[in-house]
Every structure is written in structure tokens, then in C-alpha cells.
Image (tube, rainbow, N blue to C red; front, side, top):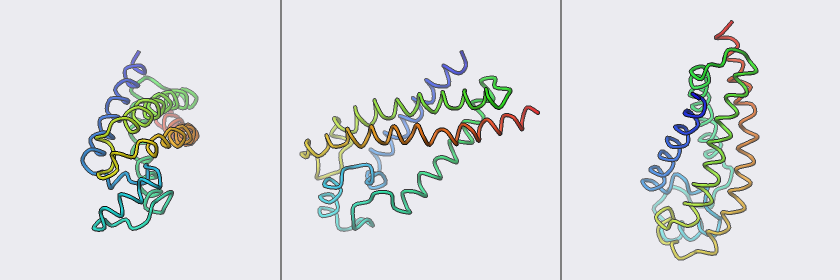
Length: 166
């Protein structure tokens, strides 16, 4: 029961964080938009630090690794609180939480809000409906990548639970 509650809370907290950060500072998430949208935004806003469309640049990789480390620490606490006592329980509980939040991110935030809610669009690109629909494929691929990234996170969490409960 605690695990289900943690999944729900994880989705709500993660979703709130992502939405508020996108609405407050769209530049921070520019790499998540299609290249054509990035190009127009960069042309219209020459004062931003980003001069070329971004993919997996060192800046983006560092941001994502930092987020993984923060999530790892949170997940260790959540999994322990959910009652995991063994390595295997730690892995299963962690991956369950990771998978649910990743699926929520992909289906609700990325495919729902980011594609269809114009407040999430980069200023000056609100009319680029066709380009924003390109996010569908990217979001699904990112969701699959998220599932894969969750595996080492779950293994590390399982190891931490094993060490804590020895």
C-alpha cells in the first residue's frame, strides 16, 4: 500500500516540478523541443545563452546525470520507507516507482501537456502545431530510454537497501 501511495505522490511531485519549471524558465528545457522549434526560438531570442539547437550536449548530460543522482537518493529513502529489506525487494520497489513516474511523464506530461498545451510552448513558437506533434515520437523514445536508465538506478537502490539492512 505504501508503494502505491509513493507512486502517486512521485507522479504528483515530479509533474508539479516539471510543469512549474517549464512555465517559469523554458530556456532550461529547450533541448526537449523539436529542432525546428528550437531554431525559431533562438532566432527570435538572440539574447539567450544557447546559440544552436541542442540534443545530448555535455550541458544536457550533466543536467540529466545530476537529476539521476537526486532521484537515486530519494528512491533509496522511498524504497526503504515502503518496507524493502533485501536487494531484490529494493530493485523491484525502486523500478516500480521509477516505471510509474516515467510512464506518467511520457504519457501525461510529454504526450499530453507538452504537445497540446500552448503555455508549455517556447515563446514565439506557439503557432508551430505540426512541429510540436513531432514530440510524439521523441517522447515515446525518451520514455523507452527512461525505462532503460531506471535499471541501473534500481540496481544501485537495491544495493543500498542491502547495505542498510545487513
